Amino acid sequence: MKFDKAQRVADAMRLYAVTDRAWTGTSTLYQQVEQCLKGGATLVQIREKGLSHADFVAEAKELVQLCHRYGVLCLINDDVQACLESGADGVHVGQDDMEAGDVRALLGEEKIVGVSAHSVAEAQLAQARGADYLGVGAVHSTGTKEDAAPLTHGELCAICASVTIPCVAIGGIKLDNMMELAGTGVAGVAIVSGIFAADDIQAATAALRARAEELVRT
Image (tube, rainbow, N blue to C red):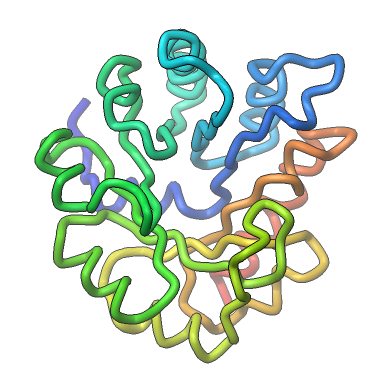
């Protein structure tokens, strides 16, 4: 599939859904992901901490195929090998994971590489080493990353302004606080519990997508 990767990545940042099976309840993760896709998620990142490699790859293959049916990119958190084996569109790595340049060397130019950044220095280094986008945060306190001190509005602005690749904000973002990010330069928001802990995932995702579109227009 040939496409303008930079533009496709920028568009995909609008509402970036990060999976967490902690809230699956009576549903399967597959069912929950499909609901968020129906609601308008523009990218899905598969994040799994407790599965074996084989089980993770098997799950990822199914979710990648599902995302592609909806025309949505699907990334793997951390695991480069799982990305290669599952056919995912790329990988997101944190500061404590494999370095962006090493990830790029393994994945090649066509795959997407995202990197977490908490400072201007980290952002600029990630871009220099081949990152396609940055996950910037945490912008609010969050139970997902309890040790992550929230960035100030000014710090978020500075990080976004320091690079030319798109930045997606992450960390404690909800419908009622998303517009606090207006004017920072973010290309969109990454959300975990606001989507996957919702009683009606499709409706919650649709509302978040509409608010995210409003955010990037301001």
